[in-house]
Length: 335
Image (cartoon, rainbow, N blue to C red; front, side):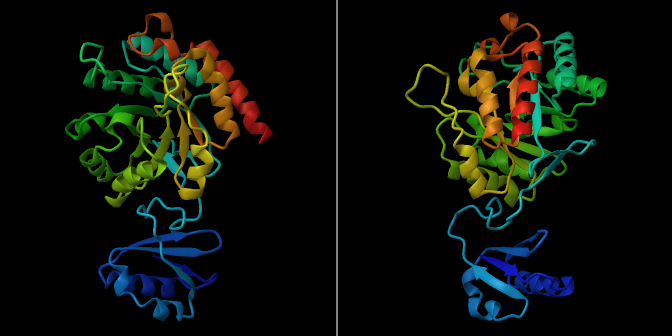
């Protein structure tokens, strides 16, 4: 249930109403917008007398929410969430657009350093790199694990770019102290124990990727798991879903951007690299993502894709990434 407060109401009156709700064992989420305040209630709201609340002189309206996701719901928070990342407080969401770029997997100090310098010069603001790699085959390269995170941290110290990398197990959290954005991969989107553990982490953004065959509501319910534990710095990522089509690795669902925009206040990032699986398709899909209103892009870049240990076929060279960043900037300038 949400309670919309009339414009111009004194803060102490709002606080008194919030205290009254909390005294009835309800979880309360207060969203202060530029023009109105919305109080979201989670719990046994049936014990609340709606007529009583609507009759208060400070209340504009009371509405029940039938959607199973509450904190991620735009009805709870009408204005876009802006997530601040790292010590530099890089913003994403609410009109702030960022490009995350880097290799599928960290392979060596030379490799991650070269890619980091290249994407930074071209306009990327966050550095991605896989340290733990979930692979379909147990015989494929699984990543450098903790050593990979150390190399990412070294590249961060050298370039000043916040780092993004994927977690697979909550027991690994102690290795992620220097990581600015913790990524939850598509295969772990419904690993609910992991999501709850990440919800207890403070001061870090969580990049939540949509599963291979999950609905948008299921994606938002996974975000709800994180947010219900107290961490509301969630960024959603569309990375393609599995369909009958074989011309591309997955099917990039760009309609997810405007649909999610209506459903949630959370930032939305597009990953055209994993969605298409083909280098020549990354640029047009990145431009389309920018055109349809995404808050950011995640692009795989490798200094020598032909020798990459993982996903070389979809990785751009730093020079190709520079072209992408320039064209995406032009698309956004038109918008």
